[in-house]
Each structure stands twice: as structure tokens, then as C-alpha cells.
View 1: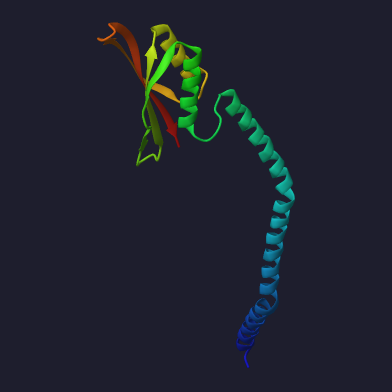
View 2: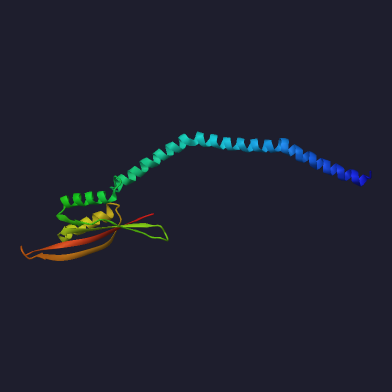
Length: 173
């Protein structure tokens, strides 16, 4: 045999030995190492769970304080709005004449949901402005999209009164 043939056989034999060694020992070592790192990550996640639970509890308390500050309670915004209007009508000289079903619009592109509440209030101008101011500033129901004042007359009693049509709009993501 020539030296060149011996070198080629040596290189081919070395490659075969490396391939066999990889198949029987190196591959298993790499798989076990990967599994160990995955288990260590899960262990760290498990040990961090109490810290995350405490942080979430603290965040829940902060959010409850914000909701209490903005006078929003419960799940149904429509019910809360009607309850607030009734409370404001009992403290001022207004009446809730109509409260329509909310209109919900979903934008197809941005996936934003816009809810519009339509209601009619009756009373004197100063009381109506006070209620509208309270709805917009003290409560977080949304923005006043439209306010329409209309002077009406009851021909039987010959009395005039002021009605205010309100559109309150709320954007949800």
C-alpha cells in the first residue's frame, strides 16, 4: 500500500469512528443537556410563582383603587351609567326621560369597539350642565360625543321645559 492510500483509509476510519461516537454518546449527552436546561428553566419559573402572585395581587389592589376613584363598579357599564344618572337626578332637578339600548360598532381594520349610549334628560339648563359636567369629569364612562338641547312645550299645561339629548361614546380595544 502506498502512503496516500493509508492516509485516505486513516481519514475515512477517523470519520467513521467520529460518526459512531456521536451516535452513541455525544447525541445522548446533548439531548440530556437540553432536557436539564429545560427543567432548570421550569424550576426557576416555579420558584418565581409566589413573587408573581404577590405582584399580581398588588396590581389588582391598585386597579381596584383606580376603579373606585373613577366611580366605576361592577361589570355592566350600562347598568352603572343608568345608576349614576338616577343618583344625579335625585340630587339635582333633572329627570331621565329616555335611555336607549347602546349601539355597538366594531371597526374591521383596527378591531376597536365603539359603544354609544343614547339618553334624554329633562330639567333646567344649569342642572343639565352640572350633570353633563359630572358625567364627563367625575366618572369614567366615556366622552360626550353629542349634546343637543331642545326647548319643548306641553300644550295641555302650557308649560315649557328643556330636554337634552346626549350621546356618550366609549372606545374599547
